[in-house]
Length: 337
Image (tube, one colour):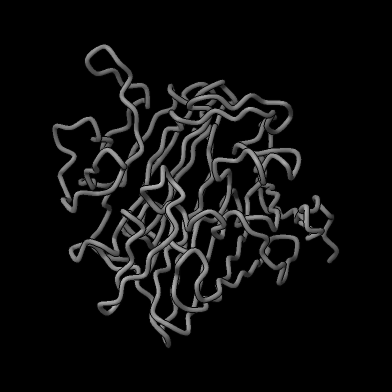
């Protein structure tokens, strides 16, 4: 099945787009970053994710809209990756102090290969070579998106390596379920009783703390808008759903718009989920259909290993070794009511 050309990079590399659909859901995926570029629910006249109409937006202006972050998603303090006693210094692409989402040219900022697709699914692949952004080992990774009726995106990710390395892939879509300028009145429920406190650089301290009595308690649904000491409280934190991966997806979070009743449930095999309310987002170019993406225009639920897990022995480890296969299954299920 032929796929349309979405654009080309400055070096001539072409980026393709694939449209997939099933039940009430239709989705567009591009090979740049394995990005979910658009997602539409039947009867709803606006996109459910933030994105761009052209490739330049993704290459030069995107805060990982819809991308698969990797080789190791989220932050690694000081870019320090120690494996079997050997220090691998990763690139420091955030404030010169931390390694974020795989570095300057992580998986979310590169073109993936289109392996296969049909009306309901698409499979993309990428190779990370030994030394990329400081990582050891050659990694082969694939991501398959499948639309399952009535309105679910199933993401299955796999990876192998020829040398011990860190692999932690995270789908990084920003969601806005009612097309409002911000998502602060959306309601969130997070099915986790603990979170990982972080320092000023958003690097976990190593503690796993109960959400009880804190501003991070979303065990009962409440709006994202939350005031503390006269200021709006902001969210960019990892919730600890479990100590380890699950063999099958479990519920991590639920998002709902009281304005139109559209909802999203996130389930995954991953032990953690990063909730980011988009507070520091400001995109200087128009998004889908000319939309303005200012602060809190969308929010993220990123299933993952915990941030900086490579430096905390009490966190589930993202280290992948030869002969092993990294696997993740994540479901994004849309509904009404």
